[in-house]
Length: 164
Ligand code: PNS
Image (cartoon, rainbow, N blue to C red; front, top):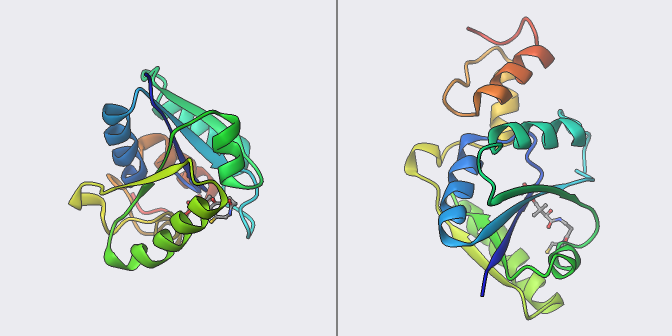
């Protein structure tokens, strides 16, 4: 039986921490769908189309990684896709409380879906999309923390601010 995993998130933008989790997930599951949330609460830096394009570029050579978008309840999307597992990354204990709450809420909403937590390489535990945007906007260098395509797009968006 082949297992399909869904890795949901805002991915605004995709970081090397996300890429690391996806690589680990792709080794564990037959297929993994990067499910990009349509409605990020506050205005995202990258549009949905841009976030999809970035993910397609980064994973273009990995046929077992699919890029999709979703709106509404995550468990409804996972059920529609007939997926088995939700993958979430845990960087630190501070992530745990909210992730635990979400996993148990999702389980209550649909007991057939399991959440699997994966740890990224310790090299990436300090990286978050929010900090990447803040550092970039203030002229800091994010080389090695995000895929090259993200770095280039951040540079375009925040031109003049990103240190080389
Ligand atoms: O990258 P993020 O912002 O940490 O991802 C959060 C995400 C997309 C996984 C979460 O907000 C989500 O699942 N949203 C969809 C709406 C939903 O199902 N809400 C109830 C979650 S318990």
